[in-house]
Image (tube, rainbow, N blue to C red; front, side, top):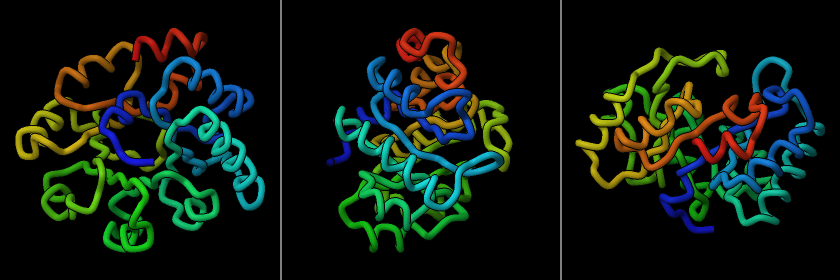
Amino acid sequence: MKFNRALLRKYFIMGSQNCHRDPNAILEEAITAGITAFQFREKGAGSLRGEAKVQLGKELRERCRAHHIPFFINDNIELAAELDADGIHVGQDDMPVEDVRSQFPDKMIGLSISTQRELDQSPLELVDYIGVGPIFATSTKEDAKQAVGLEWIHTIRTQFPDIPIVAIGGIQTENAHSVIHAGADGVSFITAITEAANIKEAVEKL
């Protein structure tokens, strides 16, 4: 699957630790409702390990494949290879982008960026898109950095007018459009879907 910045528009991130019911059912509803990409992020308190993690990944991977939705893996290089993911998203403290690109020359690669220093030091020419944030405060990630606000999107868009940007962190149905208006190509979200009473309605609002 080739990268297209439109894939970032409604970028759903989820692991079993985020779910109060079957992750497969939640993903199926989200896909039907109109998400444009999915990232499997199975990490943190309560997450699966070992074969159980791989098995869930396979199930979610096949669900995405059946609907032609790009399937990303968060951080885990070995899992990305085992599941034949379409892409991988890495943070500043994960495997260097140079090594990821060398290992996966044909996969889509995203990189999280939270500060000007990270922006200046990152090999942006090797990634397909950047994940910018956290835009708003979030409690989903145990190691979340301080919120950077909408101005950070303006700053990056001014410096790099053409780079594909997906906003990360604290994005809900109420604030998603302000993020797009600020210059992001898309928004990523977890609890906006996993805790939604009506997933179809939530995806439409995002």
